[in-house]
Image (cartoon, rainbow, N blue to C red):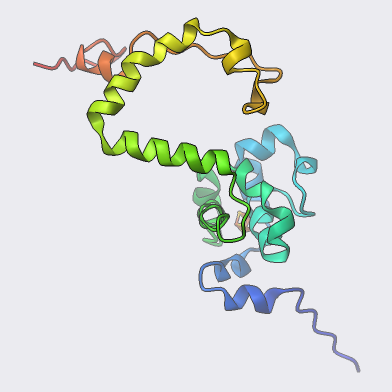
Length: 185
Ligand code: SF4
């Protein structure tokens, strides 16, 4: 009798403290069926053979420098975390992978710079509020200058969304949010 043990990278996954819970996966597919990205884009849009949230993690364990783009497809809604019967938390796993993109040299430089800018804004509420008040000015700039540029591949095939005249925060303070009874004194 011959016994053939196929490791298929499982030992590597077991070695990883952050990702070893992937091994709990029973391949039920619940994370795919609930994933808003998978439901709209289908399995062929992923580069790894197993699609959906769990496939993103398995792909990263297999070949991170090739499969890294799948990590950025996730919206991090974490719906998969709530439905997974095996407590794999595939969405949280993707969040960990996303934080490691810099280490493997695959973080988008533009997104990194934007994150630094957002960090500054969130650390300074006055600056953040001023930016919100000025945001509707962007509606006056032609789409060709802001929306359809090489910096925004998403713009192709999408109309430019308009900034609201008032932010939710302003409306909230004025007590004008639908269904909300509260009014700031
Ligand atoms: S829901 Fe959980 S157990 Fe099911 S395929 Fe996804 S990660 Fe695996």
